[in-house]
Image (cartoon, rainbow, N blue to C red; front, side):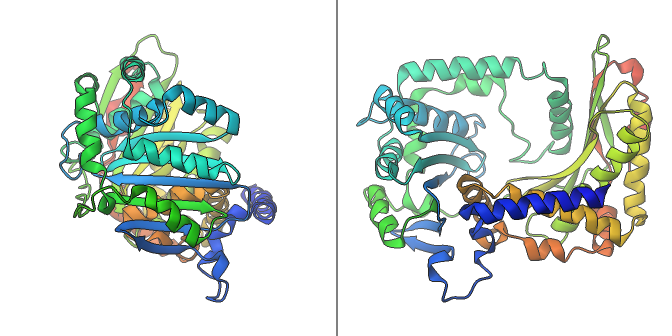
Length: 448
């Protein structure tokens, strides 16, 4: 079954790779120096860090990242970065009012959005080659001359407060947040998540000051994926020449310490027919040699859980396991939703223990690795996907090349997977949402 699925997925990704030129950057680093037009370029221009990845299609995707925020001490409010970036891209600029901006975006099928996290703000844009010049100018204006429209602020504030008040209505995501909070408790960066009072505290003057702090060229990383020359891009970068250079140094985000003991926290919902469980543990940094063995191992465990929990016993529709990376810090998870959660978690914990003991074959691991690799490259099939991968790699590891980690994935062995599980997959922090009467808490306490 797994092999058949692997063959189908590999066939699909080869078909897509053959038809979508945006996939070229994923293999560009392996090409000869002579193939200059197809290589990813990394350079600094006027103190701005730039990554240019050519793609032979009609779209150009751009991400402009401005570093600074909670992680580096510009603010103590974890809601500020995301709120500010969102408002900036909703307001237009002082030169281009929001109504004119919206007409342009609709007429040209251009997308512009903003988001942020503890590290800073990110502004993303995708436009056709034909409309790229105007779209770039609009994006640059938003960053250098933001409007902070008061009506857009009120609308955005109302929407964010409404989402925050409803955040616990989805039991699956709520279970995940409980596990996250237990796992990151005490961490100075990951442990600080936006609450209702953080959102309410954000004002337009606060956002204006924050944007001015971050609008420096030394804080800026720009990733461009598309059919554009280095010379043309250097000309476009002049849009930011009036910004101060600054002397920003990216902070080192502390590692996530392993939990000293397993913990379980249950949110009792007596009337719920289903119980939702999320269990997490501290993993390695993305730069660690243990990162890919744990990622591939958890992908393999997910296939096993599907077989054991869903196919054989019909205890859950979608049991899973995966490795997540926040700011370059890995966190491993198992999750399940079930009417009989105790029965499901016993099987899942048993299979987790098998991974620690190495009770799986190299052949089965290789099947799971091939499926994982297919999905890994499928996520980089669009210009925007490549741009995001390049930026995340540069910010999280300091090297854009780690965005294309095919060789590291292929080097994963059974021994390295077992060692990673023995080292990290312990003292699980468990969030549960559902009827407490269906939960025997000691069954969820997985220690060393």
